Length: 199
Image (cartoon, rainbow, N blue to C red; front, side):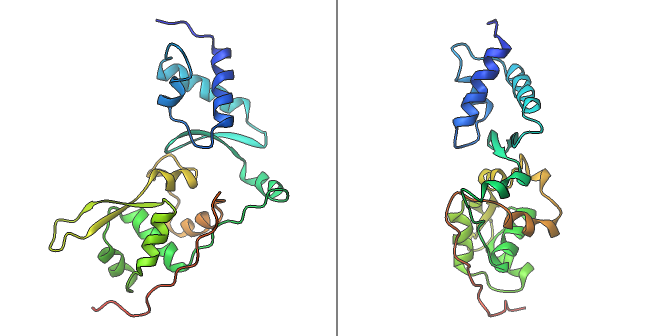
């Protein structure tokens, strides 16, 4: 078994996480070393790093895709003064559709329409797919085999969550999504179809 210097490991892992534009899972962090450390050893280093950064403007967090540094939410407003990032704005229709998929997944367009009581515009689904928040995960075994939609790891990453179990109460999802600062330009507001679904 290789012997690792925890201090050296921490320095290397810290540097990798600070320069990475994406979250890094344990499998990627292991590649930093000639002889791969155990997952337990890496987790100890990561928890040590997390403690080191407590109380600072940046924090180490664990999300669905791995580990990453991020600006603390209460500090972001100051960073926005020199590097403004406008949070994406979504219509009520988009947020309602996202909420149904997040809390009822996997579900079909028909399931969404039944819950919302309106026809789902193709633009709504396309906006959520383009943002990387939903994906097609299969087809329902009924006539027509409609597509089944579910949320992605990117959705959890953007909301700084590591699993679906950490989703907030349904009423809080919209406000959480609205506060997400994306590195991409805001998507256009997508209008829903006005006609009602037949009863």
